[in-house]
Length: 113
Length: 111
Image (cartoon, rainbow over all chains, first blue to last red; front, side):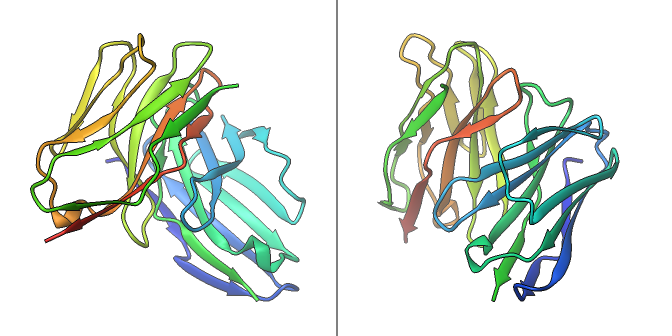
């Protein structure tokens, strides 16, 4: 089974709201990723967690706050977002964070009003 | 730094036509290479991969061969179907685990 699940599927939020995106995998993977994807563009890496520790932060604004409560779960907390943050947010996981395959979830489509 | 270049789209083909999507890469080490497919409104699905030179990845009739001498990983399919309409991303993964994507190629297959 190579399934990564993400909730919610769609999210609409105002610029003053606080919301969270959730990602889960049960493949025993120890690396998890957040990507942001704009329409017709490739995904852009935001954060990488390796063994539940943040290993890469691609200079993402502080209004995005990742959290990895355990090896199966990854959250992305959102606060005071801007309309330009509207995008598809993809979660992925891989065995250990090296050159192995990353498996992606279906994404959360976020609209910021 | 590492990079991936894909042929620009959109590509429009008739059903049963032959498909080639070109992908070349620049890397300092020995990356793994991937093709991902994204159907409308969905996330990315791994289509195929290759981890070393001369490896051939294949899945669902699609094939790509890791060519170190030409730094290429072109995607091919002998006979496309309407259901193959999607965006295709070529990507490489370096030792640090970062996925470097090409710009994506949108494929539209007409009946």
